[in-house]
Image (cartoon, rainbow, N blue to C red; front, side, top):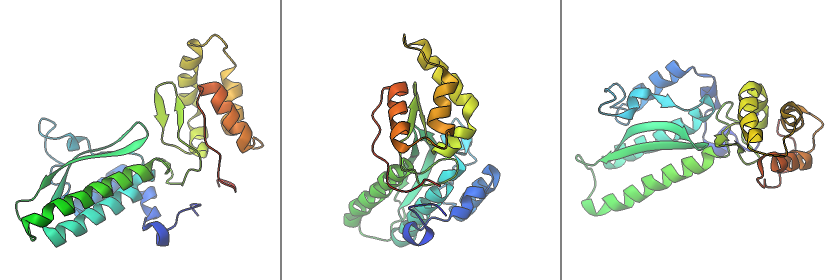
Length: 221
């Protein structure tokens, strides 16, 4: 169970997290052909040639967003055409342009629906900051920053990414006079199951110099 979120409340289909990159690509292009009509065009024309550059944890969120955009298209004739879908600074980015040549509504209504579309993109981006890009789990803590990188992963998934984290943390310590043992910090921050939420926040602050908010009550798992 994904704590804090479920199908009934969010409308997210968590089965999509298990999809391979290829299967998800096929699903999206088949289910939403108008939105991803440029998917197979060359990179000289669109960045969609690179596909969906996000982790599978965001597949449910992306599918829900496109379902909403598709409903608007069927109602109004306003087509959102994807230019690029990717992760940036730990959040979902869905670059796009609008095609309103075959409208089913009066021109006076177009601006209203464009505002609705903008709100949907803002909401999806906001939600992505609290959803693990790897497993789709709701994150009670802010995203972890190491040097110039923002990780869109929960504490559990970051643990599995230990080798990459160590490289980034090493870079941070090379720029600091008060160097500490990198492995010690990874253990305390990520792998020590007895580490309290308070200790977790404290060590993140010591390591990265960033304040982290209080955690919600309850276990993350």
